[in-house]
Structures are given as structure tokens and as C-alpha cells.
Image 1 (cartoon, rainbow, N blue to C red):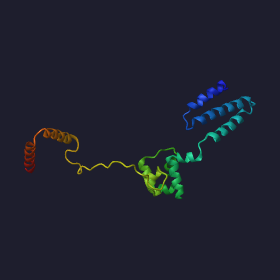
Image 2 (tube, helix red, strand yellow):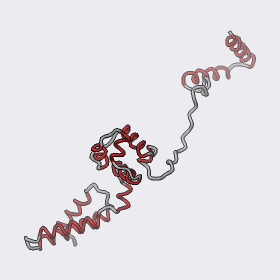
Image 3 (tube, one colour):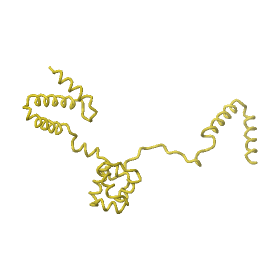
Image 4 (tube, rainbow, N blue to C red):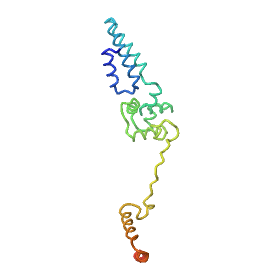
Length: 195
């Protein structure tokens, strides 16, 4: 049977907007309850130590794994990793891009979000295509198969818009006439087109 405090902790943890699965949130609530009981039972002089121990246990148990952290790398961390992989210093990047070293440091430490133009400069300095700053694989991402649009020279008269509506109306009217009248209209249209 759960205590009122346990129910409140579970409600609080379930409302947290963190990327922890629901089952893990229930475990976290139980751990918080255990932590609060340990804290209440501890000697007042020892409460701070009990709190820090419980905090480190919870962080160890519920912190995202290393692979999850790598997959959710920020652009700054990605730039630093690529720079270090190529054995370049921030000074080298500064010389190649014209950006100040302190700005490069701010970007790598995620204190500043760089503009696309800045990312283009940094990709040039790192000698990688721009997409690799956002994509892990060496090969470019596979593009979805999109319908190829026709160029304006490929679009024929009457295939789109107002012209298509006019042509459709003309077709309906001509379908109600006899063969002789259709030949007459075609002959007149050819004469007008030659002028």
C-alpha cells in the first residue's frame, strides 16, 4: 500500500517533462520516497550527506546512457569533436574562417548558436561538406524520391491553369457537334495559327 507522500511523489515525477519512460518515472518516484525517508530518519548533522548520496545514486540510475548522449549531440559538441578528430586547434579554425577564437569557444561550449553562414565557414575550415555537421555517416543521406517537376519549356499549352479550363470547355462543346463542324473548326484554327 502506498503512502500519501508516495502518491504525491509519483504524481510529481509523472508530470516531469524529461525523456524518461513511464516505468522509469515510477521507479524514480519510489527512489525519491526512499530518499526522503532516509533523510527524515537521519541525524540532522548527517542529512546533507544522505541527500548528496541519494542524489548521486539517482543520477547514476536515471541519467541518459552514453550512447543516448552521443546521439543527442549539440552542434557545438559536434564541431568540437570534428575539429579534434582532424587535430586542429581553435586557432587553426580562427585563421581559416576569420572568426574570433573566443567566438569559436562559445559555439563549441553551446553558449552561442551559430548562423548558417558561420556553419558554412566552419565546415569549409574542417574540409567537410555542410551536411556532415548535422549527419553522422560519411555518405550523404539518401534523398526521398520526389516527383520531378517539369520545366516551363516542358509544360505544354493547355495542361495547367486557365488554358486547361478553356481547352476542357472547348472539348465539351466540340463533343456535341458533328464531324463536319469539327473539321471546319479545325481548318479555321489552322488558318488563324498560320497568320
